[in-house]
Image (cartoon, rainbow, N blue to C red; front, side, top):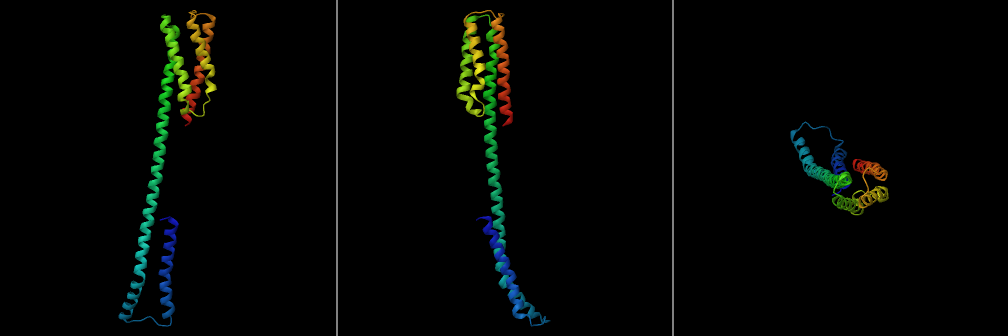
Length: 200
């Protein structure tokens, strides 16, 4: 039952109760107040007989109205709780995926400084594949972030991979520039990702 129907019903019942008294006053307005107890008993019977049922209906309607409002509040609270849980789950999922990709990018420093060049090459391949997979398949968790924003970081990872494949020295000018570029790009990546997570 909608709240407006309950309110309308309450108004109608209230009008009927008032109308009951008005009708009584209209028909017996010329009579003086009686001092006879039986007359007052008759008046009480009239009022009781005509208004008790209306008051019972009003009580029922008020109870229904209160039950309706409580049910409405519960429904709104449940919807809010579901929305909160959904947002919490999405945030936790984002934080988890961001944590995984952050740890993956940190491995770049170990891969660059690893003296075992074969292991270093394998590490770079894995690091870049994980980064590419994150951009392709996990980016739906961060819908407002554009994949093109991370193209520069991917280019640096490609450059570092080629550097390792060519067995160039870590202290060479080309290596130093790529490492500096990586530091800058990875900081931009963290800033964008953290900004998105904290804004949600």
